[in-house]
Image (spheres, rainbow, N blue to C red):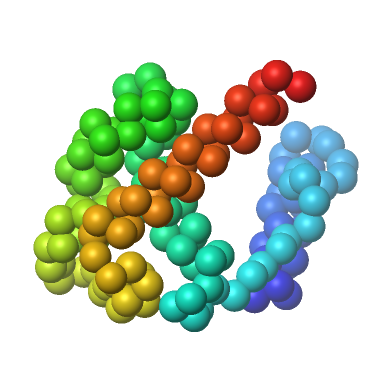
Length: 134
């Protein structure tokens, strides 16, 4: 995966630089990959929140901060968002295209996932506020 990403980013940089007569990398920092595949892995749990909650929260009216502040309303809104798999986890509904395999086994119940998501997003809000005050 690392080799593929190196080649992909290198190709994109070369294309961009040629097209716009620029030079150098177009990406900040190097690719960093991490394996998340065990049920007890905290990184996997955070990844689930990032994919299913944080991404749709950014589209919530008023943006990410507003969504975190109004977590319950934003969570309900996101669970209805058609381009997100949160509905399958939040409501425990089956889907022909979503396999709940590892995420479904990581969180015993939808309520546990929501509680973890709330804690994770509140931490994210604290971090955003810290960055703004620096």
